[in-house]
Image (cartoon, rainbow, N blue to C red; front, side, top):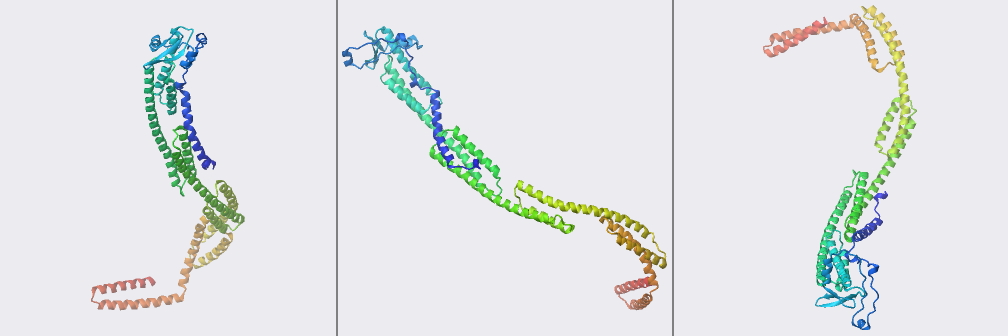
Length: 491
C-alpha cells in the first residue's frame, strides 16, 4: 500500500525539512521583533532642513567634510535629558557642532543658519536616539525568542554606530553601556546555545522513542500478527515522526539521518513481512478456491441422485472436505458456498420430499396393520389343541396380509410387531403343551431320567449313612436334596 511503503524521497524530504524548518523559525522571530540596529531617527520636518553651506578651502584641508544634519521631528525626550546630553558639546559661531570625546573634542557636524541652541539640541537628541537603541537592545536580550544571529547582527551594528557617533552626549557612558550589552549578549548567546543543546537532546530522545516503538513492532512480527492493526500503528508512528519534525527544534543532520535510517528499516521490515504474508495468503486462498470448486463439481454430479442413504453419506464427506479446504477470501467464500449449498439443497430437498411421501404411505400402512392386529388379538386366548389349530390358520392368513401391506413409521414398528408376536406366542404355548402330551419319545426319556434319579438317590442315602465326617455328610445331603427336587419336577 502506498501509505505504508517508505521511499528514498521521504528520506530526502526529512533532510530538507530539517534544514529548512529552523531557518524559517528564526526568520519569523526576527521579523516579529525589529532589532535595535534597525531603528532610524525620525525624519526631519521641512522647516528644520539646513540651508546649503560651503566650507572654506582651509576647512576642507583641516578635517573631513560633514554633511549638515537635518533637524528631527519631536521625539518626546524630556528637557532635562536633552540638557544633560548638551553639556558634553558646543557650537561655534559658524554652526559647527563639537562633542567631548575623552580628553579632547571632535567635530560631529554643522548646522548653520540656525541658533546654537537648535544645533546643539539636534545632536543631543541623536545621542538620545542612539542610547535608545542600546536600551532597546538591553530589553530585547531578556526576550525568550531572541536568536543568536540577531544578537550578533545587532552588536555589529551598534559597534559601528557607537565607535565615532555624530552625536552630542556622554560618549564614555554610551560606550560603557555598549560594552556591558556586548558582554550580556555573549552570555545570552551561551545560554541560548545551552538551551538549544538541551532542546536538541530532548528532541533526539523523543524521536528515538518513536524509532524504538517501530523497531519493537518490527521484531514482534509472526504468525499471529494482526497486519491491519500493525499497519495502523506504523502509520501513526510515521505521523508522529512528521509532527515531531515540524514542531520541534531541528536536530543535527547526522543524528536525524541515523534515526530515520532505523525507522525506515523497521517499516521496510514490516512491509516486506506483510507482502510475504499476503503472498502466502493469496496462495492459500487460491488453493482453497480450487479445492472448493472441485467439491462443488462433485456436489453438482450428486444432486440428482435418488440413492438417499449413500448420497447423504457422500454429501457429509464433501462437507468435511469443505471445512478442511480453508478460506478463499470473504467474497469468494460467499459465492462458492452459495453454489455448494444450492447443489446440496437440491438433493436434500428431493430426499425430504421422498421422505414426506413415504411417511404418508407408512401412516396409511400403520392404520391397516392396526386393523389386522384387532382381528389377531381376537383369536386369543385358545382353550385346547383344536382351538389353537383353528387360531393358527386364521393368524397365518393375517400374517400373509400383514407382510403385503409394507412399512410403517419407524417409531411404531416395534410396538405393533410386539403385539402380533404376543398373539403368536399364546397360540404356540397351547400347541407345544398338546404336543408334549402326545410325544412317546418324551415319555420314554422322562421314565429313563426318573430311574436314573432314583438310583442316584439310593446311592446317596447309603453314602450318607456310612459317612462320619459332618462336613462331607452335609454336602451329600445337599446333593440328595437337589436330586429329589429334580425328581419332583418330572413327576
